[in-house]
Length: 114
Image 1 (cartoon, helix red, strand yellow):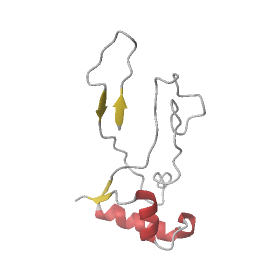
Image 2 (spheres, one colour):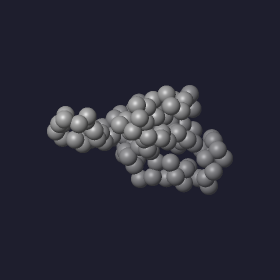
Image 3 (cartoon, one colour):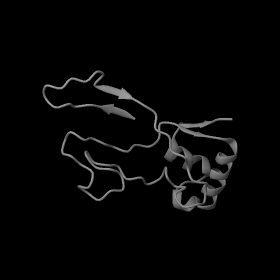
């Protein structure tokens, strides 16, 4: 995530922009929420994903936007279970095979960790 601070006039911050890593523990494939990488709403400026319009803003000073993960870190077992769950629901992904579905939603961001 990148944060850009826009202080009130007369207030100084250093640095004005910085990056940090946000981690999300993915639900087990097949359980509620396992499709976290698919169909997430994109927040408009000042809104939170999933919040009703106008519920998360303080005008133009608060900016937020959900994007697909830059990196999907997972272990071999989770990736295998994810592949099986996608294969069982392949029609919903509008893909010819599991690899196409994974590429469509996660691109090359999948990194298997031990």
